[in-house]
Image (tube, rainbow, N blue to C red; front, top):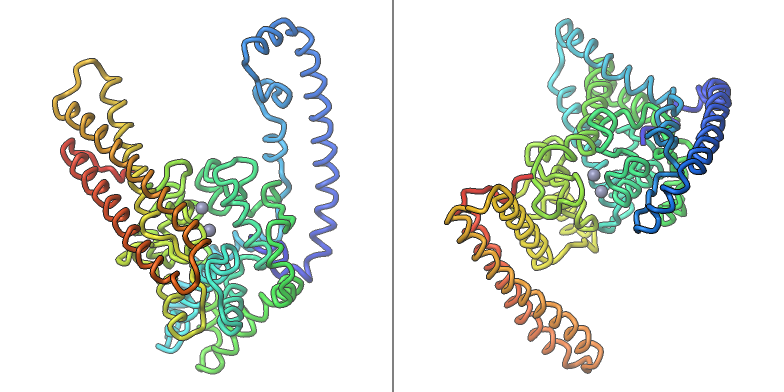
Amino acid sequence: MIAKKVIGLPLKGLRLAMKSGDTLIQNAGTQALRVKTWFDNNKSNTNTAAETQSAATSGYKNANSAANYEGVDPLELEFQKSPINLVPAIFLIATPIAAAVITPWYLLTHEVSAPVWGVFGAFMVWTGLSITAGYHRLLSHRAYKAHPVVKNFLLLGATLAVQGSAFDWASGHRAHHRHVDDRMEDPYSAQRGFFFSHIGWMLRNYPSGRFDYKNIPDLTKDKVLQIQHKYYGLWVLATNVAMVAAVGWLIGDVWGTLVLAGLLRLVLTHHFTFFINSLCHMFGTRPYTDTNSARDNFFLAIFTWGEGYHNYHHFFQYDYRNGVKWWQYDPTKWLIAGLSKLGLTSDLRTVDDTTIKHAEVQMQFKRAQQQIDKATSEGFDISQAMQNFQDRIKLEYDAFKQTVEEWKALKAKAIELKKTEYADRLHEVDDKLKHDYAKIEQKIFEHNNNLKTAFRSIGFNNKAA
Ligand SMILES: [Zn+2]
Ligand SMILES: [Zn+2]
C-alpha cells in the first residue's frame, strides 16, 4: 500500500533500470526452478505410480503432489525471492530512523512553541482519521456516503499519511478481507508473522502485493481518485513538504513544524496504521468468530482511532462502526455519526443488534463445546460442575436452535408480507414485525445471559482468544 509511487516520479527511471536487471535474473531463476520441479515430480510420480494409485482409490488426494518438491512449495520459494521494492523500502526504513534521531535532538536544542505542538496534534488526528474514516470505511468498504467536501478533505489527509494511493490501499485491503490469513493471497497475511504483516509486506514486491484493481471498479471510475493515483508522488510532496512548511511559516517555525508535524507525525501514523494488520491479528479476544486471526483489542483501539475492534470488523466489514457497542472507544465511528447529524455523511450501514448478538452467542456455544471436549478428553471422570455445565449447555443449545428457527421464519414472513400488503397497510405490518423482532432479540439476549452464568459456574472467561 505504501506508494509504489512514493516520491516516485524523479526516481522512477533509476528504479526501473535497477528492477529490470533484477527481474530478468529472478524470472530466469523461477522458470528454471519450475522446470526442475516438474521434471522431478514426473520422475517420482512414475516411480511411485502404484502408491499413487492406491492413494487415489482410498479417496486420499494429495493436493500438493504436483506443487511440492521435497516439501518445499515452488510458489513459496518464488514468494521468498520477491525483488526489493526499492523506493518504499528506503522510505519506510529511513523515516523511522530519521525521526528517532532528529526529533530528540531537535527537542533538546530548540524551543518548540505551543502552536507547533497544536499543529502536530491536529495533523495526527487529521491523518489518522483520514485513513480510518476515508481510505478504510468510506472507500474500501463503502460503509457510508460522504459529501464531496468530507470525501476530499479525508482524501487529502490520507495523502498526507503516505500510505499509497486510494487505489492501492483499497485494492489491497479488499484482498485482505477476501483472503484473510491466506499466505499467498492476503497481502499482509498475519500467518507470515509480525514483521511481515506489520511492514515486511511492503519492502518487497511480493505476488500478493501486486494489485490489478479488478476489485475496485467503483473507485477506478472516480475522476478525483484517478488524479490522486496518477500524480501520487507530486501529491505526497505537496502535502508533506509544501503544505507542512507553509503551515510552519504561518505559525512562525518552519523547521519545528517540518520535524514534528511532518516527520514525527508521519512515522507515528504509519506504525499506528500498521498495528491493525499486525497486532490486531495477534493479541485480543475473538467474540464474533474464530475462523480468522482478527482480534478485538481496546488498547490497540486507542492507537488506531477505533480500528482495534478488528474481530467485529472482519465479521461485519460493511458496518461503519468497528467498536459496535456504544461504550467501545471508536472515534472514527463518532466522527462519521457526528457528520451525519450535520448532513455531511449519509447512508450509514449497520448490522442489526439481533444478528450481532446471534454471532456472539454462536461463538459462545462453540467455546462451551471446546471446554466440554477438553474436559472429556482428559478422562472419563469429569467433575460434577463440568457435568452440570454440559447438561446446561445442551438444553440451552436446543432452545437457541428453536429461537433461530423462529427468527428465520419471521424473516421469511416479513419478506412475504412486504410483497403482498398494500402500501397503506405497510406501516401496520411494520409495527407488528418490529414487535415480533423485539421478542426474538429478547430471547437471544437471554440465551447470552444464560451462557454467561454457565461459564461463570466453571470459572471460564468465554471471551478468551
Ligand atoms: Zn485485518
Ligand atoms: Zn477493513
